[in-house]
Length: 234
Ligand code: ADP
Ligand code: MG
Image (cartoon, rainbow, N blue to C red; front, side, top):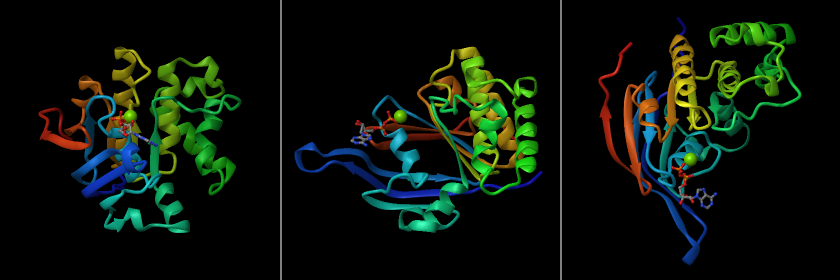
């Protein structure tokens, strides 16, 4: 087992979009500690700020105030090459699977590491990951030939090929029926656990959230409840 996890701490994080009368306070003072290797679900109704929170942790946007630390590094202060390096250490899974339609499942998974790894090495790692998510028999399939659940499993393999210490997943089961949602979550958690990665996921599905070690609830840009679940502990 490789232990390869990242801890994340948010202190007094606010995010305001727009200005003056048009200003929208998407985050209004978020305090959150995600311990290394844990799986944390952020739940809350649409518009409560879940995606904004994930974007800030991923360095895709910066907070209006407050601080975000990942492994002790101030994410908001990162610029240029150091910001690119931070993003490269993260895996992202989205609600829309965002696969490249003209590439096979295997090729889609290799895309993030091709600039850094040999083609043969990338294909070997991609094959291993696709085997772990149960798609060894669909390596050459195009996204259009796969079900939604299968496409999301390819996206999960793609997110994890760089061995990221933190996986950010925004409504990863939002386009799936409950049976597929359960299977996809199970595989995502299993692959992440095997690598020791921390998982921070946003969902409005309580069944999905309950699978995590901890569930925090957002409302109007603030975390209003957070508890340890009694689910299976590693
Ligand atoms: P959730 O993911 O929980 O549905 P979001 O983080 O997407 O919530 O949105 C929180 C609030 O911020 C919403 O009111 C949304 O309309 C607003 N918002 C999000 N992104 C932007 C943006 N780029 N520009 C303006 N408003 C935004
Ligand atoms: Mg969202």
